[in-house]
Every structure is written in structure tokens, then in C-alpha cells.
Image 1 (spheres, rainbow, N blue to C red):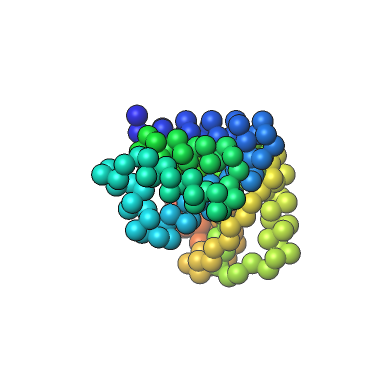
Image 2: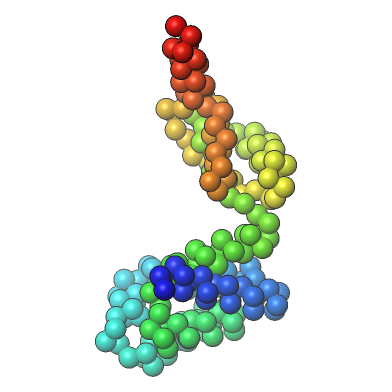
Length: 181
């Protein structure tokens, strides 16, 4: 099984428990805090993922860190299980899958928008509302600036792209003109 597949199983199990205990968002925050701590300290990451470090020592470190972070019990149990199985290397994928499934559970989609210039917040709010209407879900926006699109907006939601950029319109116009002549 791929690491993404294993991470998916763990993420699904944690989300099921967290939803049942009404702590789904907190569990995501706790998991993210632990992953950030491990990511910020390369020696810690190496110790937790190195195969020669005994699982019992990894578990002791994980339990101590999770307690200091104030992690929810289901997160502590999952982290301990990962340490016991020498699977802490799954943590980045597990976090990504968990957050993806949490957004899906909350009916939230992520949208990346690209504009030629920074978009004012009131226009972003209107675009966010229109995208929410189009998708039937709550939309979380991430804005990017790319002067190469000249003007307009490109919105990406999952694999769907809404391209309203001036650069794309000019390309389509040129193609139509070339076909006519």
C-alpha cells in the first residue's frame, strides 16, 4: 500500500472518531500543530522517523510532546499508534488527507484565484459569494497575483478552472481570426 493510501486510512479513522466526539476541527488543529513542531525541528523529525530508534522511545517522545501541546485524546492515541508502528513518516500525508476530508465534511472547497493585480477585499468577498453559489458549497479563497494574465480572473476549484483572464480571451480571439482567414 502506498504511503498516501495508509495515510488516508488513518485520516479517515481519526475524522470518524473526531466527528463522533464533536472535535473534528480541534483534531485537525492538534494534528497540524504536532506536524509543524516536527517539521520545524529536523533532529526531532529524524529521531521520530529513523528506523534504529526503538518504537517505545518514539512513543514516549510523541506522548510527551502531544501532552505538552494539549492535543485531544484521539490525536494522542493516533500519534502513539503511528509511533508504535514506526509510521510517523506518514504525518505530512496524513495531515493533508485529514484536512481535505474535514473540508469535504464541512462542505468547504478551496479556490485559488489569480489576478493581474491584488484584488480588493470587497471584490474578493463578491467573487467568493459567486463561487459559493456556483459550487453549492462554502468557498475558502487563496489569492495569487500574476501580471501575465493582463486582466480578469482565473479561478481554480479542484480540477475545474474558470478562466476569465484577458490573456486567454486574446488567445481565443486570435485563434478565431486565424481560422477565418
